[in-house]
Amino acid sequence: MQSNYLDWVKKAEEDYLVIKAIIKSDYNPVSGILFHAQQCAEKYLKAYLSFKGKEIAKIHDLVSLHQFCFEIDSTFSIIKNDLIYLDGFAVAPRYPDEFAEYEISDAITAIECCNRSREICRRLLNLKINS
Image 1 (cartoon, rainbow, N blue to C red):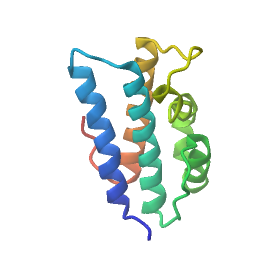
Image 2: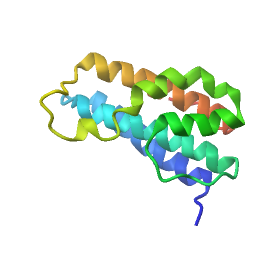
Image 3: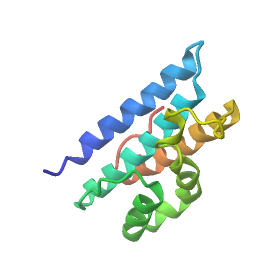
């Protein structure tokens, strides 16, 4: 059964609120910010596809989701690089890996990418862009 696009928006906003809560706390786990930034962008892309009546692929690949959205509206070209940046954070930050050390600068960039993606999607979904 296909979810309503507003269900996807609600789930995306939960990830966005988690990021905001992390930022306000004394404990700022970079990996948590990276993961939730990717998740927020993913769910907003899926919200847009749902809004347009498209079937939602059970994937986490932001580059593929971006392509599906771009084929509907070229406005998505604005956030292509943001989504490429966020794409690798669906899995890697959640597991220990001696080769994956993330810095606060990675989290700051992820938040910026997430914010731009969120704003574009909300605008194309005819939703208020609030902070």
